[in-house]
Image 1 (cartoon, rainbow, N blue to C red):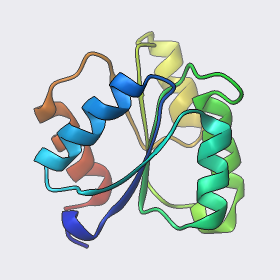
Image 2 (tube, rainbow, N blue to C red; image 1 turned 180 degrees about the vertical axis):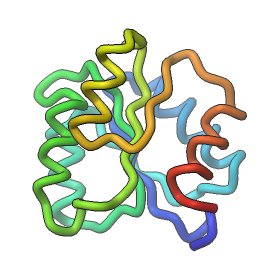
Image 3 (cartoon, rainbow, N blue to C red; image 1 turned 90 degrees about the horizontal axis):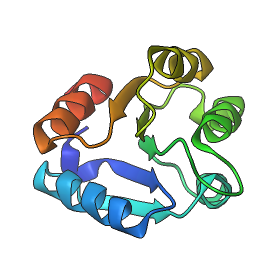
Length: 126
């Protein structure tokens, strides 16, 4: 699957962070990016469409990123898709908890475009 064919969902309560992620992903060739303002909205979008990858913040209202990962992993169509946590939570225990809950990758904010691109290539196998 090429970057231009990859459908990505970005869940973050910060519209500025969603815009930064969307622009950075576009610079990496990922142009099909849908935004969600929290985990609840992300779940609704995932129930109505199939995404190839999900990027989520940890701290969001209504449903946080950890709960979003758990809920996505319980859906048959999202059991194996790549999920990346993109968050300010950088403690080792937080990283371990997110990976244990089903995240495939973890990036701490602020990040560089190169870091995001490398992680995307890593989890998508491209």
